[in-house]
Image (cartoon, rainbow over all chains, first blue to last red):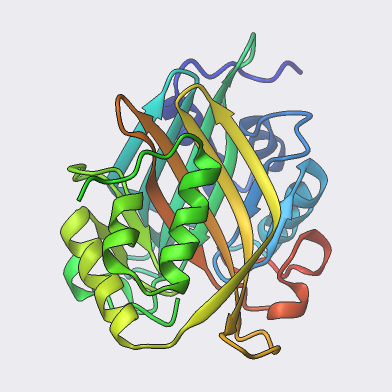
Length: 147
Length: 147
């Protein structure tokens, strides 16, 4: 099967969260920059996963955990240059079919454009704000830590 | 005083950690992309701080905490395009004068080049790997979480 060509960073990001919601491992890996040993994935509270093998292995474990999730994204901060785009976004995560927020994650998604294959994910860095869902959005309620 | 012009992302990053080690608030803010409401800083376990005011306020609090730290950086993953550079890096943090590692942080640093003022920091996103210092580097020891 031919991997899809994402025409924009938005297309690649939508495919990322769709694959996550569908726990579709092949679709998930199709979103990443292929054959690229530098790609990085950091799940909230997790170590750094680098390269396609380590990243695929972790998604496989997560998807086999079998918890179907839905994502609502908000509060985008965006910066870009030709061929590269950064999205920092607030993920509101729910168990599928539930109203309650299961988790809030702050995610940095880095997209790069590669010749012939369009936009792909180069990095996903997620973290859990300690403050909890209500204050996880922005600014004033933050409590900086040691670092 | 005129803000410095950083000729490379490396220069800006070195200035960031130097300002952090020196708890120098003005030097810290000189590293960031100025007059830019979109800049983002996420301290490990913290909420998202967006814009110069919120970011400055948090650094002021951290620096007033008065804990002098030293940083050792390693395990760079780097990607760039003209005018933009991403560094994902492992920060080994020590209290000044101590040998023991106080904390390990995985940091994503996003740098952009701005006309006339050189390279500046657009985002700093830090997270604590739950696994702890020994396994915080890379890959195999990671335990992916819910997300």
